[in-house]
Image 1 (tube, helix red, strand yellow):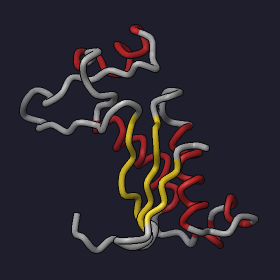
Image 2 (image 1 turned 180 degrees about the vertical axis):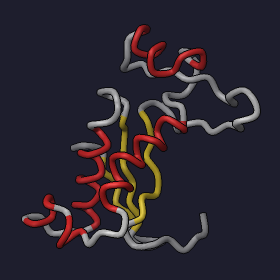
Image 3 (image 1 turned 90 degrees about the horizontal axis):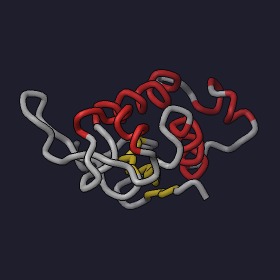
Image 4 (image 1 turned 120 degrees about the vertical axis):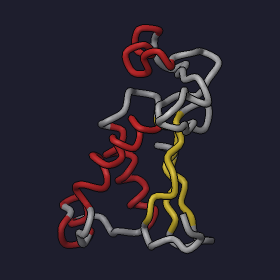
Length: 132
């Protein structure tokens, strides 16, 4: 990603306990995955053979897919103020966009996995929302 970010671009989403790991599609994961907030069964269902209590929380492919469904598809090429019902009564400030992203992404992820949402308005104007 270039250092120049577009207004309202999602910087990154961090899963609870650790940053998410990335890996090559041609090889094994570089980190094993596990969420302390999920049961053993939930971890196995979500993470499959990559589940390991000594690792990070979520497969990046799974997170990216859910970000696409929760954030990008419904809002790409839309005017937030005119086309998104949530912003009919809420001003579309960066702070409110972060809250909105949190609320929508939360619907797609297991409870307790989402730790924070970070939205960059500019390179130096950043909002971090932790569901508070």
